[in-house]
Image (cartoon, rainbow, N blue to C red; front, top):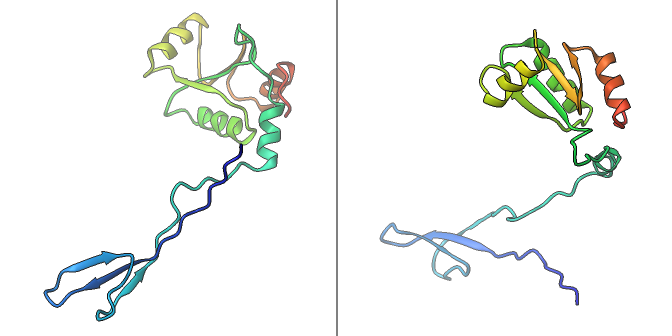
Length: 147
């Protein structure tokens, strides 16, 4: 059985009585001057566009080893980190991000990778140090991302 819901609409009025008290009601009294209040719809949802759905469906799926996971190791002050972050977002690449100075995991992973600078973009077990659109694109394409 299917159930369909309709958006409920109600008219709300406000008015002030002779004692100066403000009232709100769904049916205005006949003897008072009322003002109707506009209420924006509640619990609304805008569905994603067909392009965004297509991009999500075209992303490679992660296996149990996290082979296709994208991770950005960065700092807050790094200009190239900001460029990398923006580039990944603009290309609809989902990624995790760890600050190498403020995050325990970020510092730990950075040491394990023998990092000498930021950003480091890691796709599965392979990584690119610095911000090179060409190198990042090649790495992502090898992992199955459509860019």
